[in-house]
Length: 124
Image (cartoon, rainbow, N blue to C red; front, side):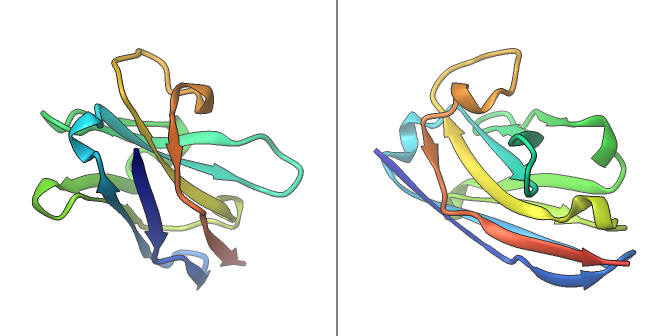
């Protein structure tokens, strides 16, 4: 079993930056990939960015490419999401999630462990 804890959310003005952290503990050797997802009120949870636990391949949804960067520190079992040039439409609860196997898609149902989420609010 893997436990995930997110941190780093907050309130920021449009154009500002935040860095989210996702600390993993437990059976981290089972992790194949980690994804960041977000969910705004009244909307479905959506994929934001993902990274392979080994190798470091990264993936992004189109709307965050060039603004967000996902990275990992395997020694600390932590995945980061650096968010720059934030927009009001980025406002959501952000979750990190761990997956155990390869898939070409990043659907929430493909991930077995989830953190509790951290609120990101971007004011205009």
